[in-house]
Amino acid sequence: MGAQTVDWGDDERRLSASVSVLGGAERGGYPSGNTLLVRGSAETVVIDPSIDVVARGGVPAPVDAVINSHSHEDHVAGNSLFGDARVHVHHEDLPGVTSLDGLMEVYGLTGEARSDFEQTVVEEFHYAPRPDATGFSDGHVFDLGGARIEAVHLPGHTRGHSGFRIGEVFFLSDIDLTGFGPYYGDVWSDLDDFEDSLVRVRDEDAEHYVTFHHKGVIDGRERFVELLDAFHSVIGRRHGEMLDFLAEPRTIDEMVEHRFIYRPHVEMAFVDSVERRSAEMHVARMIRRGEAAEVDPGRYRAG
Image (cartoon, rainbow, N blue to C red; front, side, top):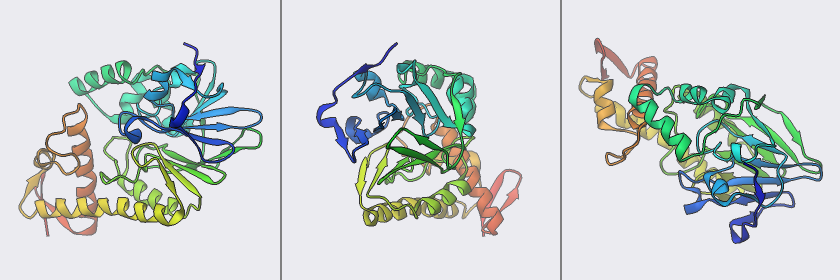
């Protein structure tokens, strides 16, 4: 399928001479997202083509390359739309872009949850493998001619999750600054790496910060730091709530059932897996810190 050049009208916001944000539905709320279009004199790049890009059948310029910030389904939805364009992703996330099996390994889903989510990513997110995709590393620069995109490795959400410096614009991808807080619930996620990435990205100085979901464009460093610190604080809040829950001995299964990440009414194939992975990482942190101990096989208590 070949992508067309499509006028996005008021849904395209120009942040600089080279960078535009193509706003997704509901400010890019999942499953939609906010896609970046970067125009240089030699090449044009689309970063994280969302399901909205697919629904519209293209972007406001011919595209030479697609850059994925990471391999999650909502960020790679439009990869197949730009079949003649090169595809790039951090080398740690290449498996999730090159094959569906690789993407499922990123999530760590098994059994019925895996098969259900496979169907979802193909049917609702238009997933198609790009075995031709190539990897980049931290600090890699894409020179488009008069516009440069520099990759900033910010792991934790996934192993290869990356942001991008583009002149006065910084793309945060899924450091999305929402009240929900950081997502580190996949097998390829890591709590410590995510916190390190939040510390690193706090030093970024830009005129505009862009999230893939919800917040969209944040203007000015002062507002960015305020939102980032609130986002980061969610990790400590979750940790405290889990410690309180472990005032009496509990299993990981009981923590999953209680839910510390998602609200009880949320029903998606991966919810239990995310709750389990998140609880395991927090309990491991508690044990390292001496905040909790395994009092019986598989049962943990604070103190």
